[in-house]
Image 1: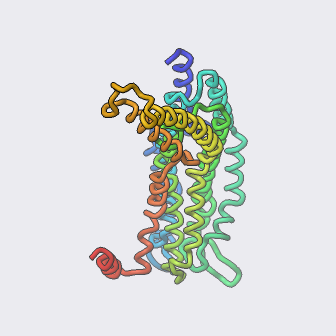
Image 2: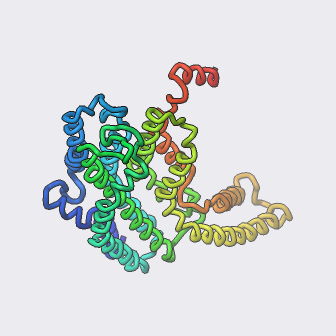
Image 3: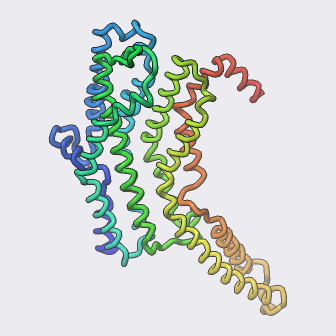
Length: 397
């Protein structure tokens, strides 16, 4: 590897679209982050304590912790999932995504997909992403949004319409409890800000990939990953697993409350589950689709080049071995011509199998499993455990 390549690779390894921005700098100053993104456990503990512990204390003092209303605090599945499952997953995801995306981006250089002449432009893409990552305007805009409208939006769209630990339903509207005020104006905005900040980071990632896809990449149609060498990008599903689980868990908690306390049925929410699956597919794998034009072009050129090469070879093969133009003392058995013909056929088959996407079936299966896991317990609302076992036995036996 040349000195220039080593320099570019080093910059790639230093890059992070997470370790930056006003919030990151604040966390550095208060000691909740050790560069690049260490102390995730401490951040999870502090944030979870801030958003959840006051609710526990306030509902205990108000008599709504275990009883007193239709939905006491400890029986509100949605709030516990949001504050004790979703937020920790989103914070922990920072470390995983940081490490995984660095490894993914370095593959463009290690696999020589980015030619040496393009490395300055490759570095410029990183620099542009880091400037956007450090934007104070964006993060402060997100803070203003969640403070002014986030809590009200939650109450209008997601709040339960009955007496709960956070509000009492009256003829003139819902009257919030002290815990309700804390939840609406502290806990929910913090949760929303963390989620929206992730969307911004994913936008930076998608923007980077789009800019990289515009480069004249050295894609090889015969690469065995059937993605011209870009198959490594499918690993983003593993990197984003905590983010995907956080979303699916939020839906699971939301549905659990509606099913248990409002008499809803799981099939009533199949459209929402389908919409979530589509959204998470676009979130995780959508950015990779920017490489589809390049993959289709590489496949088209590969079919043309290898088709021409195959035609030249098989014409010569036929003339030599079928039409009798070979040397009389050259035996067919043991000839390398047969093996070369087979190798050429395998190469042509690989080119034909190139998919228009920089991810494969395993990425789709992994995504489906991640989405389904938090939703599986809701199946018990449709069937008792005994019924579920009997149905499985009927299928398996």
